[in-house]
Length: 412
Image (cartoon, rainbow, N blue to C red; front, side):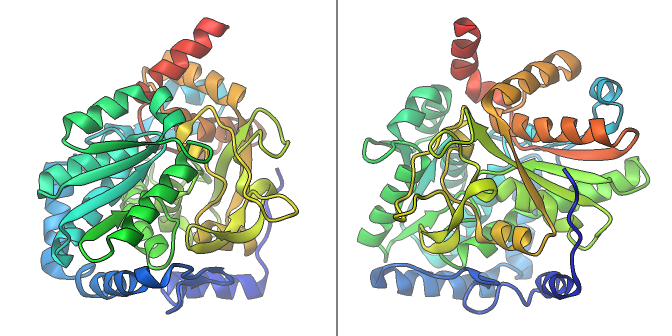
């Protein structure tokens, strides 16, 4: 894959993003983003936007969030030098270990921050959606910690393939609602969570799990997840003495990727590469590679890149990893692709499964199937860039994927 160079116009756009002039007051990242929501939700979205401005950078709020992330969630997470993989790939490979957080994935950073915000706003209950189950577990845990009832919507297909996380959510006190409409995966779960919120906008807070949805959610989730990249940048400079040549992360909705990328956006010498779910093939319906083969459109309150047909109908997607099985992507990712700052590729199911095995046998780490997609892209890049240094966002641990992994291994 040949790296694209940014022209002067796009460098200006990047500078505006880094200077926080983007997103604009309407929540636009260039032409992407915005606020496409029912009138009944507009007051709630306005209240959320005002609350973010009031609390997000407030000293007391930040102090509470940082203390909870440290004492309860286990931050900062480690930076691991993958010594055996480095020898196998011919590169210096580092892993940012979000799998070491409480609940096992990066999702806790966002869920905890939003749960604290919900408490400040005075919400009486929280709703959330989940695909792989990690955001649902994180939301259930955060709400239990804060003391707010939590309802999690999850597609029936995902409930079947992520049974351990369903049990964890219930143990943490959340009500788990099986969604049997639509494709019965993440998209359908988000639909149902929105319907609940529309019906109860006054006393309910919706913790969206990724950098999707109407403004201000893409901005809010980005801000809460940016701690990943900030920590990784400092750790690399301390342990390695230099920045990486490239950073890799898996991309579904895109929260862990935007979180790790953001600290490196201003370092133009650092390549940033997102890896989407290539599924079974490049055919529409066989993958979830939105940025690789999608077209602009509106989904779940935002204008971004989507997988839809010529009639504009959103298509069902496929991925062995539930967390990447989504037909859209966060608008900031669409913007970063459009200006050439981040490159996006895809990895197929079979490739991701091989990387799970390699990481397990080489490093004694069981990565989530989502994270394994980033390993696929990183390995290919390393083979074409011998001796270079790369950072992989290990977004979560693979315990949740054992039913899927056991089935796949049995079928083999």
